[in-house]
Image (cartoon, rainbow, N blue to C red; front, top):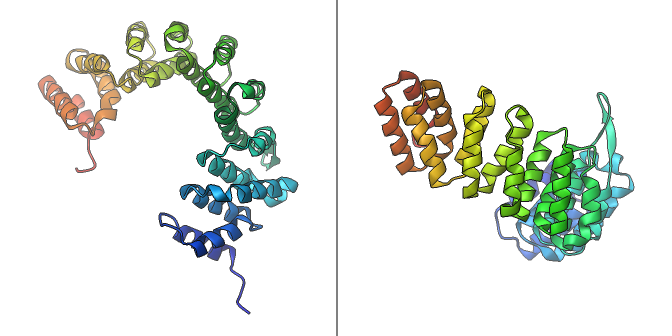
Amino acid sequence: MAARASLEDKLAAIRALRGVALTDDQKAALRKWIADKSNLVVAAAAALAAENALVEMAKDLEAAFDRFLVNPIKDDKLCRAKIAVVQALDKMEYLDADVFLKAARHVQHEPAWNGSEDSAAPLRAAALVALARIEGPSALPLIVDALTDSEKDVRSAAAVALGAIGSQSAGLVLRLKVRMGDKDPDVLSECFSGLLAVDPSANLPLVAEFLEPMSATVCEAAAMALGKSRLPEALDPLKQCWERCFNSDLKQHILLAIAILRRPGAIDYLTELVASESEPTAIHALSALRIYKDDPRLRERIAALVRERASGALQARFDRDFRTSGG
């Protein structure tokens, strides 16, 4: 009788199939791994099924999810299997909402050094985004409730989901949320981004209202959302905010937001700072422009400006931040 494969053997066998076209025998083995009792094996198998877009295994994955709901703390620590299953089904664009609804409501408190910790937050977050795709506005009650979740990852995902739904109702909920605020700036940033996704022209002035340097964390959240929006109309509010800001760290974040707009006017503004402003300001602008280091034409343009300044500190920062993988 052949020895039963160990956990390490199973995981190694799954890893060996990454990036290759699966044969029928390998697909049969994958079904067995999805049915395995180990959450680590199931998590790895789910990722492999998603990689190969094996939609025919969706029901196997859903059955695995249900198995790990029976005794979740004992059988699926940190929700590893359940998270991987939900991510795999979402990647497959699975349309049955049942598994995602279960995931969006699951809470799993596990022992931690300070008492207990809810390990299911990433699971709920992934499920909310999937439900926005599947159910659209019908998912609003659950997603709105998630905006009050105790875990910031879930609140952030709810904001992303509302932005993806894109309806007027979703936009109004996001508007209310930013007016009420959140203790975590990352959540607010996703709410701002959601508003800009729902209706850029109507909501850009609202987001720009929060570019108030006296409230640094909220200001940074609004700035980064405006930057990620890539809307050309976002440049002027960001410039105005930077010019009236005296917080050095916040000024750096605003310059980065301008850089990630990836608009010609934004690049021109930053390069002008490099060319003509004080050395500390030029260094900050140069650091923001670092995201373009792999653009050879822009890199040479910036290099020329730095050479013209003849500043040792500016040249040193350029040499450090604009070093490419080729040398």
